[in-house]
Length: 609
Ligand SMILES: [Zn+2]
Image (tube, rainbow, N blue to C red; front, side, top):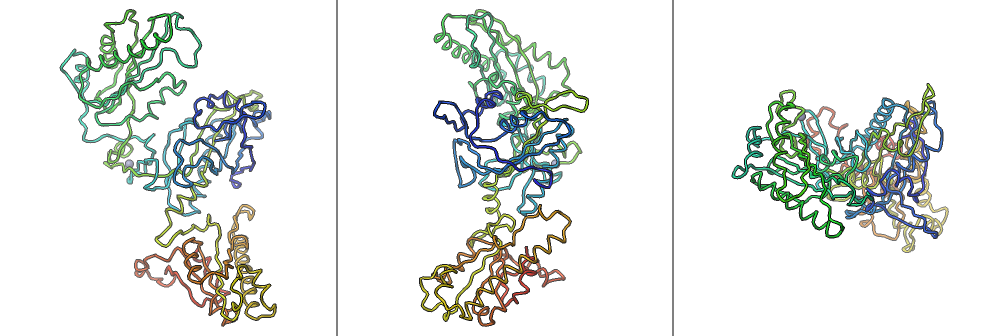
């Protein structure tokens, strides 16, 4: 974040709700928010994400284009009232997240910021070294028009990722597009006949009907007001296919109330008059109960029938204006209500991509290049998500920038997150083996684990000693074995730090931007002298610190000249696959190195980072 000009900041967890009311997310994210009141009854929320807060902060400052780009980030706990918290750190109601927000004066510059953060995220995840994938994604609650997710494939994942190995196309199921194979497309002629025939001509479809309440919940107008309108949204997809709600909702992004509630969900062979009958019954039941509760009775309703047809459900060779118009006319004629008094209606037909792509669908990108390749569906866990937001937040919250020509326009924004806790858990879940964890070096809580195994002479009479300080206290200060131990630990710490400083100063990047991972704070000393050796050896492998240095019999008998090194990630590696290589010794992934001269430790460790 620092290397792309990010400035670190900390925002409060306790947030005023006003900006959230303005952006309507106080309503749309309602169930996910932790709400609190102060002693005077003023409402707050515990921050689940910070677009509103950061935009308000930036809006307070009259920003000139000269100050942009502005890239701000924080690493802090977020709160979300998850319906199903699960799997340790994967989906907690309080979780650690790194979030960045970028501000630019034009869309072009905002997309440059987006690309900078995208590349920085690639560098972060590559440095950790656990395989991941970048997928096209839906923008969900956050909004905006461009969005991508970083994922780690994991069978416990909640996301389905569709991936084409031929061209590399990767997308979340919410967004993915595939070509359905082995499903016979229904011809345009058959479809029009289906609509025209009264009875006995049925076709296989997957159909969902959504019915809007007569009066949107937020509206205060009375039912006696002239003409009300009601949307009936009918989604038609190929038989056996699931509607993709993210794609369906995208038509209602301005006002989700216009979508309404699902009243019908069919996946069967049905004729159109049956379908119309079912829909009419649903409308009447819904509206009768509405009028029973809300007198006086008024049936001046204009019904908007909207047919959303998946473009793969019907084969329209050329989707001309005429062919669509003909469909509209046919449907229009069928949408007359026999039992309704005032018949006002309007019909629209829209062809679009509405279904979930599935495993084994054909890759659309490859197909466009006349290559046949299948999509593979895999479970994955989301570890990062980036969004180009445009003016979605700056417009309602009045965050503006003065351009060079003095005009004032809404700031262009982006937001970016890494789920630190879930990334940690997922990464370690990918690398672990049957003996326990194997921490990737860059995110390991410690880099080196020093395990002294005291000789009997030094341990004698000190069975209750459980720290290095107590050991020093309980021993003669001139005990040669104690001196060997202390100077050995100090030497290891010093030569590792020296080696790292040298490596960092040789690289071109600024040292302040480089993370130190071999300084004394990252070295763990196991001074639980009261515990049995076997127990501690087991522990050292189970908690999976990358390098373990054992100060045992060889160390004390050589007066600190030799140590034993264990490289955790090689414990269960099959070395046979390397035996064909020319530089066999150099490439060997060896787990245990015995009798290593202490001076050789840094180079051996750095060669196997
Ligand atoms: Zn492909």
